[in-house]
Image (cartoon, rainbow, N blue to C red):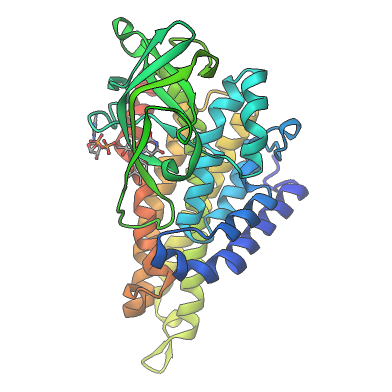
Length: 380
Ligand SMILES: Cc1cc2nc3c(=O)[nH]c(=O)nc-3n(C[C@H](O)[C@H](O)[C@H](O)COP(=O)(O)OP(=O)(O)OC[C@H]3O[C@@H](n4cnc5c(N)ncnc54)[C@H](O)[C@@H]3O)c2cc1C
């Protein structure tokens, strides 16, 4: 076994970490204040290949496998989580369905613009009445000649307000239950009948905008059906499975950053005439944070490797996501504790991470749903 990342992936990871720390972090205050990621930062991200991580080189992407993508996601976690959220919703769940299931024509139409960052992508399954129970969605796609007509409402859709392309899951045959779902490539900005609702006001991850997507007799060409008709719930959710490994990797990067900040603060801050790092209570918090980082890293690396071997990672992707996101919540809490009052102040990155990380235990399947998947697979 070799736990070293290959040299080219190590280099790319270092480049993205530097970008997050030296280019994005200094703009964090601006992103928090405006709830907007500046376009020049997105352009820099595109030039570094962040929008094309999972897109084959033939279509202008970087063509990384799961190990490479996750190495980059770990680096993304080292900086502003809202910024990382925009990139990961695009590069992960926004892109993977098209790369996996798309026809040559569909790939040629969309992937080059997605790789360049010109067309930002997202994925829409969640509805007001079906979140965890995603098999129960109601958005309907009816075939009429060579088009499908979509009606229904999705909500909490990441990147929707800026998206040029959404992978939308809708019901094509209600009689088949969860096997009667299909995926569609929808261009929200140019498809009549598609509108974006009010932008969500969130606790954290500022700049990563999410919103409702409303379909009212929206006409989507049959050429935009992604994968087979009635592809089914399991296949549709397969798009999310690989995303979960990426969330585990992002969480690991966030924990590493929080640990680095905490170690630096513990060494610099003096109380009772000595650095607080000399108090065993503080040392224990740092040690527990390091344990969380190391275990989460080994897990995402293993699951990413399994993806690259073509193995079924349904159970293990949930193990990795559950472990890393729950660990991150504890690490964020400890980071605030080590920082003391400063960790509660708005200008502290620790305060921001404390809010931003909370989402990771909810989206792409809550922690409870991850446990149901793990147990379901064990008992199958
Ligand atoms: C900021 C943000 C961005 C998002 N981005 C996207 C996106 O890009 N695309 C998309 O499609 N969706 C997106 N989502 C939706 C997200 O995936 C859902 O919010 C999530 O799956 C949970 O669904 P819910 O909010 O309806 O909660 P619910 O399903 O109502 O869950 C509420 C609680 O009940 C628990 N629960 C539910 N069922 C069970 C059960 N069977 N057993 C035990 N506990 C259970 C849950 O774990 C949770 O604790 C986003 C959400 C947010 C907040």
